[in-house]
Length: 115
Length: 108
Image 1 (tube, rainbow over the protein chains, first blue to last red):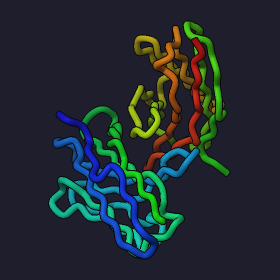
Image 2: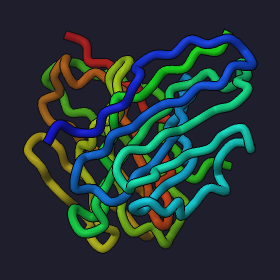
Image 3: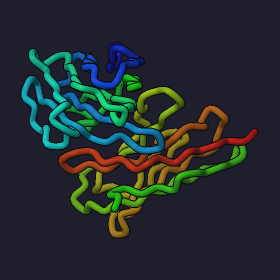
């Protein structure tokens, strides 16, 4: 088991561009979560999937943010028309509903810088 | 106001014990967690405690939970310089809520 992986690790973009991040969860985990972390703060929950179903998306920051998990394995988070305020670390986590208290294991994050 | 609160900074000498405190507001929390984050990295799970427990020990780590006061603490025995990091407390009911993190500095 290689843990949760995220790609890319760093992304620099210009304001107004679209960006997409990928998360590969731990292979047997059926739940996948996206968080945003800004400097000096803890992670802020955005959305989560159980298998391919997106069970909570009301906390996505705006309609510019969307996430998918089409086959219940990897997930993508897209931000359209990026703004400077979107600069942050985007963290992905996964868990198993059936073991370990549904404990979430985090990936290394994707750091987004919007110029 | 914040659902989970932590003091922002703690400084200790190598070999001493560190105690990081956390308060939360959601009485229906089922699990409470401690995560460690080193610079530029994701969060590493340290330990978690189910809400019907009051203590959990795992090697150098001791977690104490006072459910009545909604207070959680993490004690690190024999603190080492490698323990320097930001420590996040989190509580979970339906979703996970994190505190802002406590930056632990260990001086040699």
